[in-house]
Image (cartoon, rainbow, N blue to C red; front, top):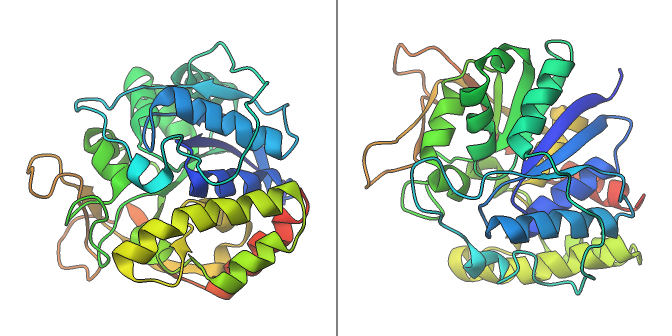
Length: 313
């Protein structure tokens, strides 16, 4: 099988950084066409900075990085410095990036790339708010049918919310954008908190990263050590969940994951449950399934894969 052509849409974030590194370490399975940045965990100037820092950490200055939307479609931007630190990538002491952003806007890059490729050959991998993807679909509806698949990190159902009682952060930041994407008709693979909370970086797993002895391995260990302080305090877990790497791991080893093809709708009206992803897990409605909603993973296999691939960088 040839590697899958993908675009990673991101708001780095420590876990976003690990997802990008996993993609860069896996050329047999992943052909990364570009990275598009969006406001989310931190404001856009920092997410673009962080994406470049991560690529330079992996010595991959050839990767094209694009700045996208700096605010949600219809709401004020909500950020998460309380989780990720003031830079969004607190933990390791990485040098300021030297590589330049591309001049083209991220949304235009997404549109141009999908138009330039044969239908069903480019997969979109959003691991932040869905503003860039929804804007591209609104501006160029002709590209919707050309997308092979969208594999995204976002939402929750049985795990409920992590930013409100009902909503996961990525969806909550721009629920209107998420609604557009979930209604688009594009095949969706959704990595909600239900599965990502099972991808926990324990002390032993973090030690495996550090023991790689490389700049990448040490930086990832430092990222997860910083990241985990929030989740340990909030959830009482043994470590931090690596949410976003579930997306890139699925591209490499889909057999590590399991879920159901169900109907998923996004709440965009009620302030009480704004951004909730309502998954018809038990099939109690007549609504047609529109997403594979992932619910479980082989955590040991996931971390074995992650450690083995990071060792390549």
